[in-house]
Length: 287
Image (cartoon, rainbow, N blue to C red):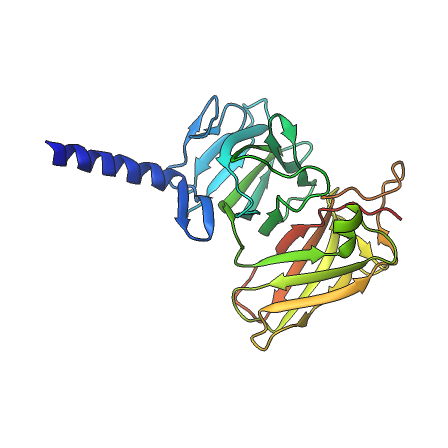
């Protein structure tokens, strides 16, 4: 009898792990891969809220979150583990379907009711691999062991291959500057170092810049494009260091570029990656 009870308990544990994988490996805090994705009309640490958006496992793997004609809302949420040891939120958007009207998606992680950060895209949802360091922020980083992940999607149905929090993504972009630590912003004459980390070697890597509103091209020092050079013989790490002269476009009213509104699009050639690698510049630009 005890053996049967133990088998039932093990079976239930395995089932829960299949729905939301908690620490499936040493690099991953949690993983949502869409298998038996759990939903409810309330949303909590055990399920995604599907009261206002449809959330569905996809037959080819992954899952979709999106608007349907009969739904009047535009958001979902789930309470999930967080840890500074696993600072990176990473996910892959494989496809976006549109409905009539305004289109956008955004992430709003919250701790204690306060929004720690906001990033997303308006009008043109882009496919690719996204990685955002939620602990490298200018104002308020995540605290505690749990956070409420709010996702807003307007008149879109986004297909995700996966979503997870990790120590290091397989493929990602990072920008660093002494100015980020010293003044929590950057401007003219500050130095930025852009680095792309790849799991497999590549023959070429570069970055293009975009503004999150309509995803129009942005400029660093009047250039849309930044060529990276390999740092190692394996050509898995690519980088470039730039002294800032200007960035555009800027808000006409606010006279600056808010953190999280400029996207870097990493383009990899001659490697195993066939999709762009995306990351926001978390810190604001003030001229």
